[in-house]
Image 1: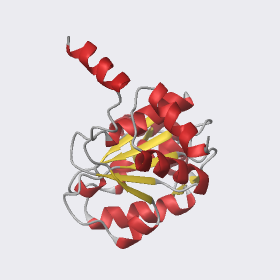
Image 2: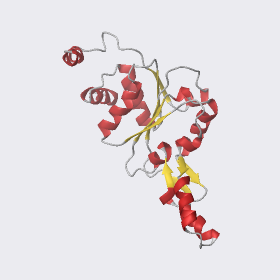
Image 3: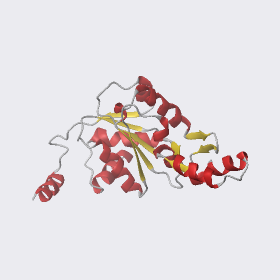
Image 4: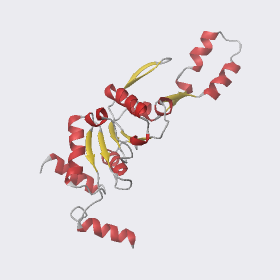
Length: 211
């Protein structure tokens, strides 16, 4: 049995019935260490691919939900400004340098999905969900960041991935994605399952759940 058939069997054992082309795509993504880009209508199971991969790897699933007008702060990190303000008021007798060193520290850092993903000791599954909802500018920003898997926080320095995450970016095909995004990912179109894909075993499990 070929490697991609093994993966297909593992997906099936984890509850995800994948057609041949849908099993081949994540196999190539793993082999080439490139992100996976499943595209298709809502409800065909694109997000479930990421959930199933996380279950199979017994690792954490980290989700970045994309939306129109999204900025880098909500995707990478933010500072807890309210706590920083309280800390500044509490340290009224300190020098400006001392206050700055204290409030711009890990204690006041809010990790967002992208930063959390590269800080995991074990490679997580990073789900970038509905990337087509984000603006083209944010899409380009993601390309730049995920090319080397590191971020620079001016106050703390550069953080590089300790374990490279398994990246799966889904698209509902609501707008055309850039050629650069498609070329740097393993693309696959996910359609509704046909009769050949829905095996008797899967049909029996579905009937049981419906009952």
